[in-house]
Image (cartoon, rainbow, N blue to C red):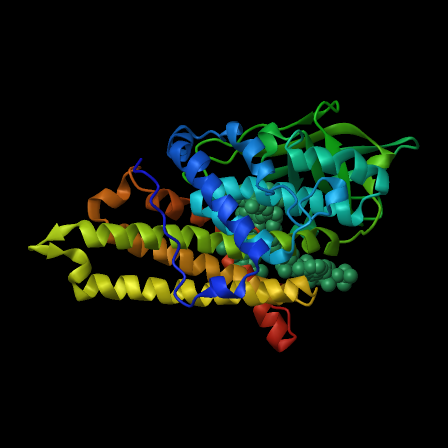
Length: 392
Ligand code: TGC
Ligand code: FAD
């Protein structure tokens, strides 16, 4: 793969709107990605393995629990810093960002928000340091967009719960130490349970042959009469709103992350277009290529501003779920379109692993589907503006 010469586009001087802390956190993540992720990520993707060697580094840049308070091992940062870290990591690879998103927003967040003090102390510091890796089990083979229909269930057996069912398409599943699993009790009410590797009847087979997110490990969570101690239930909230509130945090991170991937594609295409000579001049001098580049930068700039405003609202706890859906949907869509256009600017070279663009493009095919599909986020906006749910 080519050396990482990334220069971040910032057409509207958005840097000026960030605090010193934001810039410091962002720059540290950017440097770490250049040094530790870029040199190894293409091989990891080609070999379809999650590069475990970067786990410690992810912990050091604060990617595991950026906004979780320091007393639990988190970085104690604000939402904009969280977004900037996700942006920089996904600039490297969406699969690496996935690992960080799941660990932070889908495992640490529910334990922090809905767990007991004992659960927080037991799990959060180890998750923040990367000693424990986590996964989040909501999706099932027959219940993806409609998680409320889940059939995974647990029964009260006096001194423990008995958990049965299966989750599918679970990031980090093959190597997770703990899984936050959403299951129905005997009354059909959804609760979160912390399931630990080693519990009898709990297995995590890997999903192979993915063309997308190849540097992220995806698998199943299978529960066959798993005895879960009663103290592993998250008591703070039940119902579908509990997992969906975790998704709000992860979707926010994706809105920022996708722009990282888009920035990388744009920057790569711009550099290539200025260097590649055809018909006696750089292809950057042809109007058709300039149109592509100008439109990419316009969309990136709009999305950067959307993210910043959403981050300000999140910092005040004022962002609605529908606002987060709009940003996730918009930013992933523009990122995938930018990846496709950037790939064309590189001509044949664009399909090789010499450049990051094709990997980003394939990764974004997962990003546009997980954490709520493109269609589902549109329907969430539709519901918000009309008051009429069109899901069913
Ligand atoms: P609905 O009746 O609308 O809502 C049920 C209850 O949930 C509440 N609620 C929310 N609460 C917090 N945050 C949100 N975003 C919420 N959205 C809804 C709602 O108020 C209600 O509460 P209550 O108290 O009245 O019961 O539910 P529905 O069954 O009609 O479904 C709505 C829909 C379709 C929007 C929802 O099911 C949905 O978002 N589906 C998409 C599923 C999804 O996003 N799955 C993601 C799985 S995790 C994943 O993909 C990780 S990838 C990680 C990575 O690698 O980065
Ligand atoms: P379906 O729900 O079957 O949807 C298929 C199509 O139908 C989509 O185009 C969808 O938009 C459309 N559709 C569905 N319902 C409607 C409707 N009401 N109106 C209009 N159109 C509709 N899940 C987890 O729980 N944890 C994870 O860590 C996780 N990681 C993932 C990693 C990867 C790589 C992938 C690909 C997925 C992951 N997921 C995870 C699952 C992901 O959240 C689901 O794939 C997603 O929610 C969609 O569910 P589905 O694949 O079953 O598609």
